[in-house]
Image (cartoon, rainbow, N blue to C red; front, side):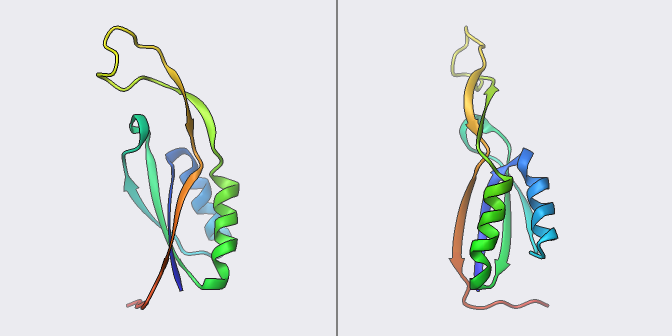
Length: 105
């Protein structure tokens, strides 16, 4: 069994969760923050059998595509210039961890 931890952009989280559920994956959403320019992100965790990892990763790839968007400069970087900059958002950071034991009560 594996534990999948996926960090995705907030805008992608709901569609990704819906798609995972449609494909019969259980998913838990954890609110999280951080990253470049403090753009919102969501951490999703899923426990899956080893043979389902590739299927789950493919769904994440389909729903959490990277793209560019304009974002305001973080406060304090440039006090005199408040020009939005183009940044890459979306995509996913995925961790696949071995699970020694799974207990559901």
